[in-house]
Length: 78
Image (cartoon, rainbow, N blue to C red):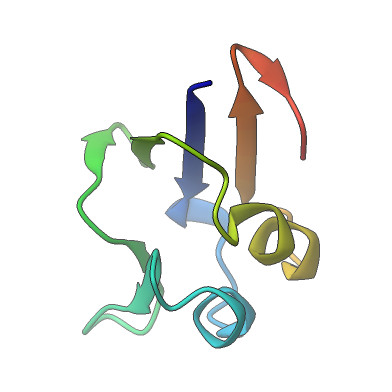
């Protein structure tokens, strides 16, 4: 199973929910917006591939801006 997590920082509202719920994957950057740890930057998105979903689904579901996307084997979960 391959899980892909994407964070679109261009629509992040800096609420910090993702960090509170999933600090293993997310942190707040110096600019005040969420940052996806150990990610690859592609345009405004940060992307990381994982072996399992960890807490990424909970983080995505808690995001009021809906800027976190989680895919499993290419299919969007959140």
